[in-house]
Structure formats: structure tokens, C-alpha cells
Length: 553
Image (tube, rainbow, N blue to C red):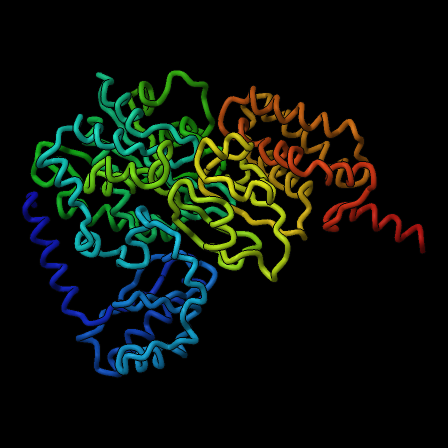
């Protein structure tokens, strides 16, 4: 297939879809399927036949739109009517009233308009709107037009210039400038070169990358194609954890479809450019998300980090130049090429352009997957998009950055969300986890929980992480069982900073963040635990309480 043929397919597909007066998009993501989404899909297919509207109404199987807590979710177009918690029993009524009579079923509509009001969807532009199993759906939305533009009108240097101009920073957590990383790989004279897309996502409660893969796999593939063209790579790998079966299935099908249309292979769209890719599976280790650990795993070795330099841009897979990018970073690339780097740079802030996807969870009224412009405040995310705290409980803290993130108090709710602002207050962007905490939670117990997680997930290669985190864990065990001493506060602070400064990789360097930020912003709770033997949330001292009950008896 040639470059011009892709445009013809796009035009044909647009005309084909316009022939329908309505489109019913049924979310069949891994978040909705357990709640009966496939039965809802079948019920819609049967209902449109029953009312003889199948010629005017397209029923499509889509990915997640982000309203994860109220699935199965269904979007009916035109008008983007979003229905929540749809059951097969109410599908017939929905088709009759909405499709046949033109009367939306009001009591089934999604309860919060504010959830989408301040979002800006670039990465999730197609989520919930296209069938991820049909490459034609992606093409109809402008998909693969960016790689066509690159091959037809742009040099590799021109592509890197636009990416650099955009100001895009890596969305995997560290925020390294994407254009700069591409330039380093492109300047290397060693061959072959590789592209690795990171879809490991080991943070508990984080699901943005998985959702992207399930909802819009071709956005990842096109981003990899453009990156490969820019840096001179001919082979790519998508590193994905094996616990994501639906994402794996969706990506595998997308790769087969892309090859069939010559979008992958020895002659991409019948041009001299060649690039192919395959999936590599991770076994679920949190540390495997670190870039050098990914390289080891892709090569078939144990996923353990190594010292840097050399950096992957110079010596990555099998000692060759390798570009490693998070899949969210790659999904931004097509829209940057389509619209220009300057256009993208105007979204977000001067130092942090574009948007960021977050998994919004915890004690929040509207949990789900969101995409917001850089620079939005935590207050806007928690109280506007998130709808505030469940059961009108008082806000206590927000954890930003996953298990290696920071616990921030109410006084910092007006903090803009960007890499530099978060780092200054002890948090990180991380892989995009925001956990909202109410007054019924204990911050000492929260820090202990994430310390326990990091101890479990440490690869054990370096002493600061292996031994230091265990030392922190021992101190927490003392404090939360009634044996804590005032000196333990200073010991935690000292150990946390040592681990942060001396650890080999990002896991160890950021693991103390929950400890250090709770010490910084919630020190009074530590003192209550140690001096008063009191946990205001009632989470700690359970063993102590049991012993006192035995003595009373």
C-alpha cells in the first residue's frame, strides 16, 4: 500500500461512518468487562435489530472513556451522551427512547458533567470513541496521517526539531526532554538502533497506560513509527506486563493489522523506510519499569537496573543505541507532527507543555482516568474533576506519584501540577497516580504501607535500597505497635535521605518520598503515635489494644 492509498482509505471510512445517524459505543475495557459489558454489547446489537434501526445505528466495541467506577459505560453519538452502569435489562429501553424516539434516558446519564469540563484530551483523544480492534476506525480519525506526513514531506531532523520545539517531556516519570533524548540516539553512528515502548506500569492503582493500549493501540504504534524514522531505528519492542491480557490481545491485533497495510515491515507504505516491532512480556516486578531493568528483561535476563552511564541512548539493547519512551509519551507524537510543535507548546505551561494522564483514585466521588493540561492545580483535580471527598468527609492529603510519590497536605492544594513544582514539595509526577486521602486515614500507616510495598518490590541489588528500606520498615513496625521512640523520627529522616541519595535506580531514589513527606507535613501524627500511643484514625496499635483488653478481663 502506498502513501496515497492511506488517504483514500481514510476518506472511504469517514463516508462509511457518516452513513449512520447514530453510533453506540460500548466500553469493553478490562474495567467494564467484569461488570457485564459484553452482555450489554450483545443486548444493544439485538435491540437495534428488534427496532429495525441497524441501518441507521452502528454498535461499536470501544475502550474506556475514563469513568471507571460506573461501568459498563456507553456513549451514544451524536451528542456524546454518556450512560453509566448500563445493564442488559435497560438496553432495550435505551434504544427505544434515545434512538427511536430521540429522548435520552435521563436517569441513566453520567452524574457529573464536571468530570470532563477541565480535561484536555490529546493522548486519550480516541478513547471510548473508536473500536480499537479496527485499524479503519483509527485511520478515520486521522490516524497514521502523521507518519505519512513524515515520510512524504519531512526529514528525520525536521521531525526531531518539531518534537523539541513542542517542549514534550517524558511521561514515564522523570520528565526528561523528549527531543533531546531523540537527538542523542539520532547522533549515534552505531547500528542497529532500537525503540522500546515502556508499558510496564507497576504502580498499584495506576492504569493509564493499560487503558491507552486497550482503547487506542495504533496511537502507540504510530508514535513508535515516527520515533524510529527520526532516530534511524529499524526494530522496536513494546514491553508490557503479562498481567494485562486484554491490552496484549489488542496490541497484537493492531500489529497484525498494521503489517497487513504495510505500515510495518521492510518497506513501510512502499518507501525505503523499514521498521517492525514485537511485544515482550514482563513478569510483574515494579522495578522492571526502570529503563535499564527493561533492557535486561527484553534481552532475556533478570530485570535488574544497572549503573548509568552509559545511558541507553549510547549503549542500550545488546550494547546498541536505544530510545526508551513511555507509551503515553509516544501517543503524543502523532498530534505534535500533525499540528506542529509550536501548537503543542501552547498547551500546559512554559516549562511543562502538553497534558498528563492521571489515575484518580482513593476517597473521591468521581474516580477514573483523566487527562489534564500541565499547570492545573491539585484543588481543581480533587474538588472539580474529582467531585470532592466521598461522604463529605474532610480532605486530609493527596498522594501524587504512586508508591514513590509524596503525601501533600491541604495547604498545597493550589500547587500547579508540573514536574518542577511537585519535586520542590517532595512529590513526583511518577507514572500518573493521584490518591485522595480523607480524615479516616492514618498518615503513619500510609507511609508504612508504601514502605512495605517498596521493600517487597526491591530487586536487592544495591545496599541503600535493600538494607535501608528494611531498616525504615522496622522503625515503622515499632511506631505502629506502641514501641516507638522520639528518636525514631530523626532516624526515619536520616535513613530516608540516605536511601534517596545513594540508591542505584529510581525505585530506591524515590521510595522514601512517602516517608519524608509525611514527616514533613504530618509530623504531629508521628508524635501522637510515639508519645501518646494514639492513632487518630484507629489504624495502628491493634495488638496493643488487644493486650489491654486481655488485662482488663
